[in-house]
Image 1 (cartoon, helix red, strand yellow):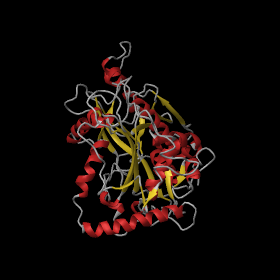
Image 2: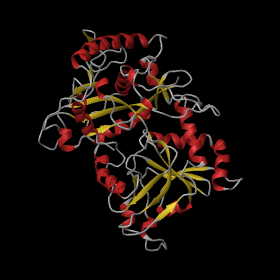
Image 3: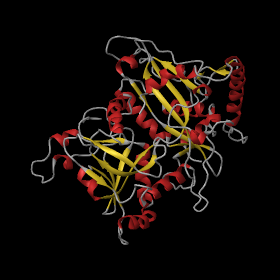
Image 4: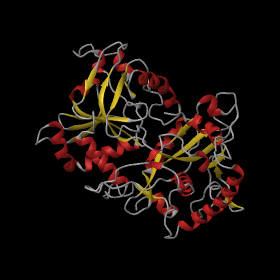
Length: 480
């Protein structure tokens, strides 16, 4: 997973590789920015429709990366820790403030990605001390209504606010966070890929590219001492992307059971979406790929190094599972249990897709029963859904394993094991997942795609989707 600050710093470098005439582009840019402001203001309370995807872009072939950076806009606001974020930045009653102010036909807070890079200095707090948090959300066009829909930003805000507290950063208000998301998405609709095609037999969306949006909060002030940053930046930027595990949507992942390196420990920041949590996974991820694995599955290392002496299991089989470098893990057990590691240890990121899959599995257990019966080979099997400590030994009882994430959606796992130079040997290949998802995995993926497209809903999940072109108030409430 790319560290957030590296992504931001790379914006200027990416913009220098533009293949078209810069002078002409600047003329077009000014025209587009005025047009975007006008369209944005009108689209909030009109039926003129969502701006179409930009022509000439093969969205379906885009990798999971920063794509077409010279054609984006980002939002940038600043404050200091004493003042925090105030109504001067955004007032929801008037929809006014620095965020939405327009001068000479241009938003004050809206910057062109390639021509207005984020100002950073060598002494910037976040560069020296890692005080950066961020979120990842996905915006997609509905294949049935054509609306641009953002998935569960309410939950992202709750996690964002918790992370801000952990990194000594003043959190923005919910209203400012949501308006910033809405604004950056509306002004980048030309980068939102076309709606996915529907399966001709089932009518279920087939997936596809998305407009990924990343809110960031970072210490952007200058200092040498170890203390809270004198300036705080709130940033919203986007990129059209493909799948995180591109090419692996059907064939399953091969995961390495990481027994040496720790992603997170109890009492740390493993449950906070901060940049440091991804930095520590980079070297182990490169090592795993060199051994033929797609990613690492991390352990609670203290449970591996301090096994229960009364247990007949080896230390490794007693060890508790955490998650991947950037995805949560689920097991489908032969007992009919769909289980994922619990959050009580404070070492696992509370993923939005993780929570969504848990909720869907609970709400639609009756629909899952036939596919669970097919997966385990027992017609009368009962489906149960749980969050608990999951051990390495539990992997031996799994008929399916899959991982979840905003970028990954739901991806099957075909095998998990150690490498030849690890201290203790372990290997398991699951009955389902090598060439295609198992029955339960595939059904949950279909359910998720139906929910994301607005095709499946009920009272409990009706506010999971937010219409980007609704009013600011309706966008905050959710529901389509």
